[in-house]
Image 1 (cartoon, one colour):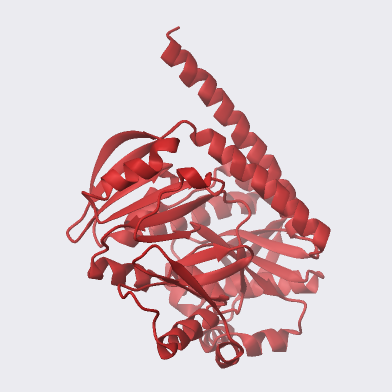
Image 2: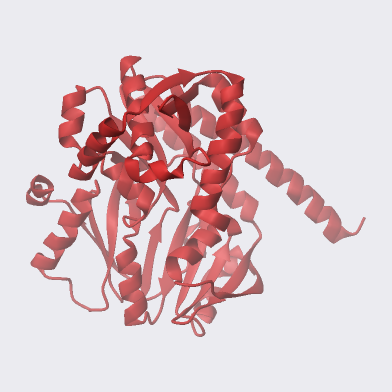
Length: 408
C-alpha cells in the first residue's frame, strides 16, 4: 500500500473514532442539559464541549478544502468542512453561484492563504473548530464569527395562561385559528405510527420544505429516539395529519423532528405546525416537565424557524452539539454586501451570551439612537445586545440596557 493510501486509511479510521467519541460526549451533555442548571453541571458541560471542539480540530488537521463561489453581485471563498456550505450559499446568494474547488489549505497557513484569497474575492468564510489556535485564525479589516446553529428553550413551569400572555400576538392568532379548526392529538408509541410518521410525514415534508439543504435523519436514529419517547400525532376529523417525535430527559422535554402528512399540506395555513408545538407543550406540561427544548435553529434572526420559535418567547442558548463556527473575513467589503450581511441578522456568541451582528462601513461608532434601534430589535429576538463590526478589524459589544429590555 502506498504511503498516501495508508495515510488516508488511518486518517479515516481516526475520524470515525473521533465522530463516535463526539457523539457519546454530546449525549452526556444532552442529559446534563436536561437537568436543573447548577455550577457543577455547567462546568462539566463546558469541559465536555471543549473536548468535542478539540476532536473537531484534530479531524481537520492538517488540511481543509477551499472553494470559490461566484454570484452575480459578489464572490466568496469558503474554507472548511462542506457540511453547512449549502446553507451558506442560500444565505449569501440570491441564485445558485458558480462553484470551483481551489485545492486544500494547511491550517497553520490559513492567515496567509486568506490574505491572498482576499485579493480576488469580496469575502472569505471559514468553518472550523471553535478551538482553532489564535495564530491560525485569519483576520482582516472586517472579521466576525457566528455559530451555524443555536438552540431555543421555553420555560413551561409557568401556568399556561402566563405562557399564552407572553407569546407574540401572531402565536395567539395561531392559537385561535387552531381552536377553530378543531385539531385533537394523541401520544403514540406504536411502531405502525412510527412508520407512518417517517415515510408519509417527516421525509416528504422536510424534502419539500428544504430541498437540497434538507438534513434527513436516518430511520435507525429516528427509531432510537422513538423507543426512548414517542409521537405526538395531531388529528383532523379523526385522521392523523401531522406528527412530532419527542423524548423526555430530566426536567426537559425535547421535540426532535416533525412532519405534515402528504395530502394534508392544505392545513399548513390553518395552523397545523403551531398545533404540533402546542400539543407537545400541553403533553409535556401535564407530565411534569419544566422546560421545552425547541431544538436547533440557524443562528440568524431572519431565519424562519428561529423567528417562529422566538414568537413563543423562547430563550436563546448555545447549541452544545455543534463544534464549529463560521468566521467571516473581508478586507474591502462592498457596501451592498455589507448591507446584505447586516440584513441577515447573524448571531455571535461571547461566552454564554448572544449578540446581534451589525456591520458598518463607517469608521465611527453608530449614534446612540442607532444603537438603541439595534438593541431593541436584538431584545425582541431574545439576544443580550449588539456586536458592532467596524472596518478596522474591531468589534464593539454593546450589552442590552434596561430601557431596551423593558421596551421589548
